[in-house]
Length: 573
Image (cartoon, rainbow, N blue to C red; front, side, top):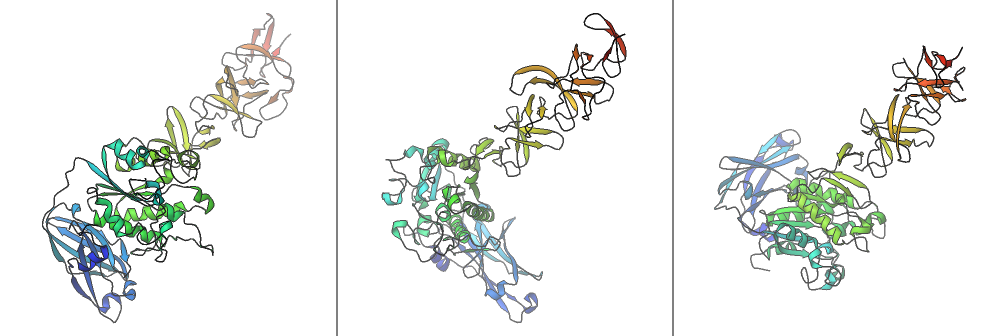
């Protein structure tokens, strides 16, 4: 480790401290005591980031504070930084990156504390000076990685095989996700600090070298984080951790070895025994040490652990997402990557195959905007359920989409609907086993008795007739059929059209008689189910539009004169 590297705790103790005080009176906080507050701005080693802190007097005081923010001004620009967490002493923390202002000069910081009684405390501003600022101008983008065994490779991350899952004997180096990312996007690989079995959390007790448990193995450890620029200052840092925390399992008493913490409370920097707090600690350190870098959090995908221990991945992913939202970092949630256990993971159902590695890369590329069109399309999750993602990488929910001239329905859970009906508020569709809406085809209703029809747009037909071009078996036909108010095809039924002016006859096969003489069946019924008395077994004639000839004289197929009665039957003298 180079001499300039120091532990963050040492930096906080010995770096230049900028302090400003304000007396808070009893009237402000409804207390008899008087407190004195001190705010500090502590620079990192390179002076391009400052840890802002509003010091807490004690826990009793904290109960009166509802919100803390820091108003920073340089020149004509002012940015408000909300406190994102507390440290273990209860001090409120925020991170100032000089690149947010992109200028040198005097920086004025005013801390503001809002109390839960509605009053506001404004501390007197203080000023610190930034001598110079220059934006980085690099032709090559350097990528560093902080991770666990999924990112290890013997000879790259370590020369010790006990800490590496992937080796030249079982996996091609070119297929590692970080190598694929760099190769596809003309990037340079910086440092991959990945240790098999390592967690984000540390309970303060475990120290097991064989399982890589202990302070120096945790992803919050300053030594690991500070190593990420050993091969050049990183422009992008991929923080790929949390899998081993999710797979830690339970203690003998059934309680989880790794707890999440309370996501509804402000997280605590330096608290390493709960996941959300530990992740915030690691993420804040990454931002503090490398304020110029783009930090990308990669949260775990589901594995066999979710089957053994329940859904352990989701709480981890939610914790990571919260930390990213507070710090403004990019978030890659691999639960939506389409990684499937039987295809994209090794025999242990945890570590990735080459295809799984590519899916990680695609998600990272999408987050970085390197391949903005990637996300548009279908992807399967680890359970094999199919989802659809738009061009922004967002999973669609409760939406109808048209893809390659086919309609699909994405349900309320974001899953492509299959073998089910769905209504868009006006039309009813049936989505087949492949997810596409059935079009221009007859099919059986799920009750197994009735026949229904979907037109060329996929709309189920109700109370109307339709020109049917495909039979249930898929054969080409050229028939007209009538469907009732339930969408059921009429068979052996005499009915009136929608206007109530013309009769139509659907024969026992469900086909409307068209342009010919025919004989009504002996079992003919009206649409309401009553027997068609005086009509069954007699003859009728259907016009070219399927309406029955009525109330007129005509000649039958043998040239005999007959009268077509109002019920559509032929009457002979």
